[in-house]
Length: 80
Image 1 (cartoon, rainbow, N blue to C red):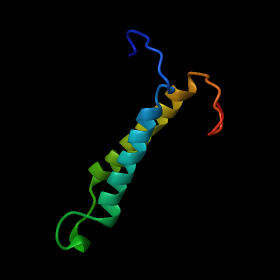
Image 2 (cartoon, rainbow, N blue to C red; image 1 turned 180 degrees about the vertical axis):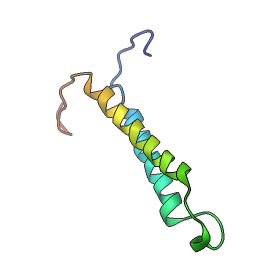
Image 3 (tube, one colour; image 1 turned 90 degrees about the vertical axis):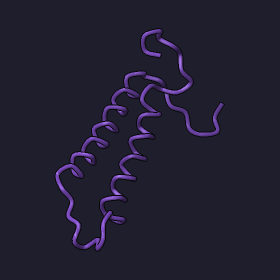
Image 4 (cartoon, rainbow, N blue to C red; image 1 turned 60 degrees about the vertical axis):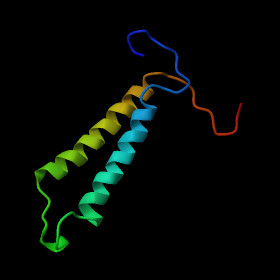
């Protein structure tokens, strides 16, 4: 898509933002609510967990910057 400069019906980076939000939710749920192992109180989070959370936030930030580059005017839902 980037090499051929295809026109898309959505701004570049929007789908990446959706995936990053879903990934952040899944990582946060896995680390805070449903910790793996037994018993859960004995399991501690290591630096890799924080790295994964930071990675999803960086992905979200990059996708927001990329979608802002298009300069496309946003319309409210329901407007043709």
